[in-house]
Image (tube, rainbow, N blue to C red; front, side, top):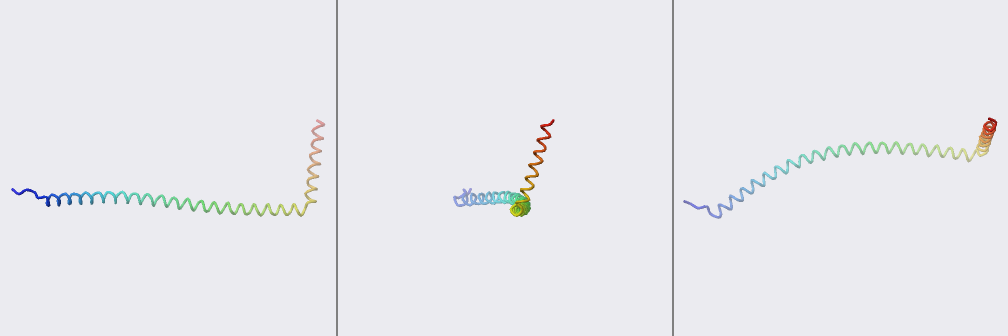
Length: 106
């Protein structure tokens, strides 16, 4: 009867270790594929959200630009037509006075 030598026992252990290592590598690769697919979906969603945010940012920028132009033109109109503003103010004050007189008569 031949006894198993130390060398044969070491080769069996190394072979079993290699089989376990290959099995572990297959499981890791399977999990890695699932993770990569999930990451790709997340990146696609992030790309969509980034595009929407960029579009909204451009819309807001355009609106702010339009408002700035409008306020600038109103300001220049007020500066150039101070007499018109004063006349309008006088009319508003007169109407307020008439309203107060009518309210006091009731």
